[in-house]
Image (cartoon, rainbow, N blue to C red; front, side):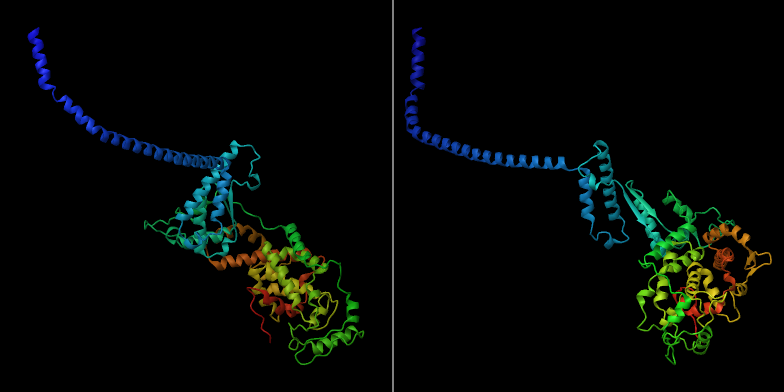
Length: 520
């Protein structure tokens, strides 16, 4: 053991002599280490302080974000599909997005699709909520588009509108109603799609020698767009009378007045005639004139050449001429069967009639409600009309018989015809001994039986002359029925046609079809 212990001591002496020096060196380095530790500690504290500040900043931002999130959540919870829908509609109102891209459907389709989806979602939300919603005052769940007067547009525009309608109907939220003459739409489609529909029916497009009877037609095109066709019937007699009454009542005086009696009128008349060569009174200074004297004055000085048809002196009371009298309304109702079947025709009749009245000279106005012939002065003859009746009758022919009015007035101006019966006979409308009529050689029954066929003829675009003749026959047939119906009270067939000729130039100038009156 002694030897081992001695060896261990010798080992430690040899290898551990460096320890004291190490500790000396360690003591020398200790201040530097302490300094570094303090520096590191300070840096640590500084870093912690910076992190604390960052933490506070992030916590502040967190609070702000949470507050914003809560605000958005609150806003979202209070926002319904209806609000989104209204917001979208308002954003599109007043913009020119569509007008400046006319013909480009991509943007329109995108917006309509978005709008349709919003409406659909809104409808779904209503099913989940109670009936009384917060925005029920502004509730809407469909868009209904009304298109009227499409038959006033050129063919290319009609086709564009039909394409737009087809686009809208691809979205469930849209309903489209179109008021139009189907004949006009069909013809517009033929023009717009000549390659598809062709100009004629009996054509052989594939060259197999067999006409293409079963090729697509404009009606096939329309049936793919419009699901529910609906025809509006023409106005019946009750409807015409109600409308004409409504239109004229607005121009009637609030105080019920009637034109002066004819005898009273002649006694008190102080009429200043409008002449080309002289200007004295026709009825002299309230002097009571005999009927013979009236005839003499009118025959001598009221020649057709001298009378100024449209002259209006400054003394004429235009306000009075714009007032509709009850006898005018009553006679308009009598004429209603020949005034046409559309509201537009009746409205034109009333408006033009007021224009005719306001254009009368003072002399014409003074005899307007009397049964005095404006050319020869005859009075109270069986075949003489009140002058306002002559005006209304001629205007009814222009308005309610547009296809016939041209030949009617042409025959009216012929000096060979003296009555309505003679005028009708001159245009091949004849009354047979048994009381029946033929129109252009055909009986009224045969015309009625071919009326439905005429609709197909117009669709098939046959000869326009044939269609025009049939339209005239139908108009004349309606006129003859009116003539026969009124015969027991007033036989219009024997009316003095010369009285109508006098008012012709005053009335016929308000016509699209009647040729202008040429004075001799």
